[in-house]
Image (cartoon, rainbow, N blue to C red; front, top):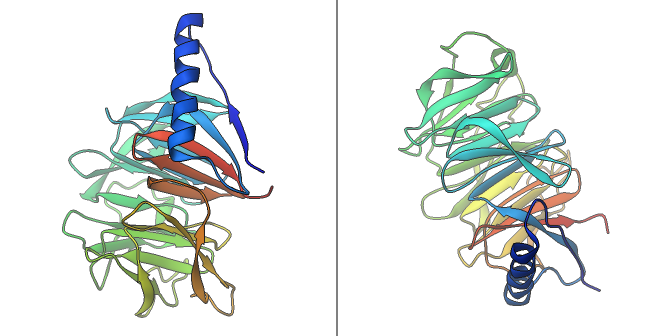
Length: 270
């Protein structure tokens, strides 16, 4: 049975009525989830990231928001991409400059990346505008230096994400790869293994879960992942109607952004 929750905050009465009507139409068009407990969260984002119990996102104006309860609270700064996880809070701006939160403020880090992921097992990974791949070992994450020792990783990816059992990425052809032997002290790992399927993005959760989106905006989950089989066995489609353009996963919650920028919270525990 589909369960949908709507919340409306800080809107005048007439605007609230219009918003309710609009969101109901959105739910009819895009669906919530067959067999899933999904909520449509107030707000519009272009990118979202969840990790270490936190949820951050950025909108079309590069404003940064943090989810506090059911409310989006604006966070200082401007970023096109934000990531949060065991390795802290990081981001990249429109010029691909890298920033991290240090002593409660954004600090610029030397280098350029277009996408980063702080959800790995004590490490940070990212890719630049040329799809070159980089990573930081755990001992470099807490450094206060602006010149961090990023490691070059062989290969070419447009999106890269790490979780408990390794790292996953997709290239410009939407081909999927898994990086073997990645650890907090060896973020470079050893070699790439191709994985069947085609995805436009892939996200690895801190518990080892892996989700991805294909070119049609459909959601897939990697089955059979474990410490003894970090690549898993197969992809299974997640029955949540879309299409979606971005996702993130943490602590049993799948966060989705559809093609209109609407935000969905799907509790996979239920």
